[in-house]
Length: 90
Image (cartoon, rainbow, N blue to C red):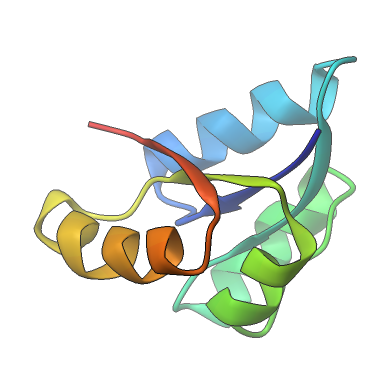
């Protein structure tokens, strides 16, 4: 399964780390509003930092949403409307 991570704070980084080692999932990449942070995390885990959330969503079958709680509804709703399966980190 092609999976991506949205948000590269402490929870998001942990999900990136775990996904990079799972044999049953392929870490496609990650997205963060702070492109510099996203790029550093991607390099650290041998992945790709996407320039936009939409581009990441198009490349994945599922996403882990690890953004601040206040943004869960706004970001999650848009992704669900695109037909992407979500795991929302709480």
